[in-house]
Length: 119
Image (cartoon, rainbow, N blue to C red):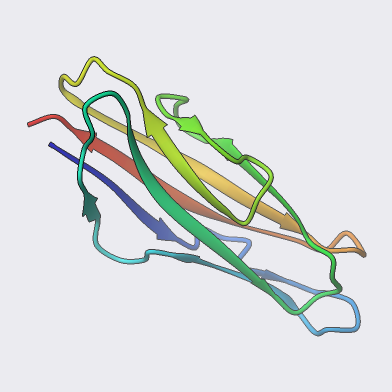
């Protein structure tokens, strides 16, 4: 079994910001899916967003884009985990979006793909 996350910028990668320059967002992990060990009663995959530029403080909102197959464990934090609770059968895939807004309402977003494969 594996549980993985992949993050990528999908439009909205940076926005005009206030005094700190353009607001930008990056997610990790990036690129290929990174597998994690699956537990007996629950599974999780972690994704972290890093905002730069713009005007602090930043607000963070994670939301489902394609499905709500997984639980967003900390939907208003830069770093979150996505969890899935049994039954451990089949393959589940969903996209989630992190939107970051700065103090002067500049906003950027990036998407993360979450995959659970019970094979």
